[in-house]
Image (cartoon, rainbow, N blue to C red; front, side, top):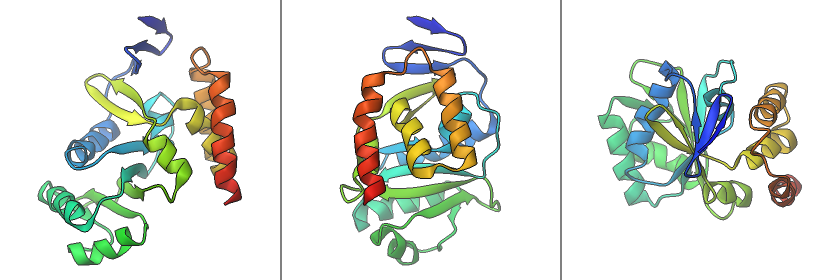
Length: 200
């Protein structure tokens, strides 16, 4: 077991040395429902926050393997049953219009607006997102285990595609925090995939 400051790696899972926060519990509640129905990946800001970067966020981006209408209906009913609501509508037909077109939808706890989950469906028509979804990295905080992109992919996506001030700061945090386990060959491999995405 390789011990580093702030984290260690155990059986290919990155274990973060910190206590759970309210935001962690919020994300865990949603993922506990989602993972019964579909594969998923937590991406963007929460990756940096979960690894110790001190910044706020109003939304958690979650990639989800695209579902057919019947399977999405089962998931949608389960989400509503567990005291969540959807910004885009209260019925399957209202929300399915967005899912069918590959557009994201948002879920929050009943009576709340923030934080919320941005639910982003992914299939092979979105090659970069599909790649990260199918090459997950496990991460754990206390008893909360979830999946994120490969660190090198997350860093490059923020630097090349998103490239906002907050994204670049997130990427810098990840580069510094995980300096000892980042692999140069992965940066080279993933950069080609991400540049293709930018050129699309």
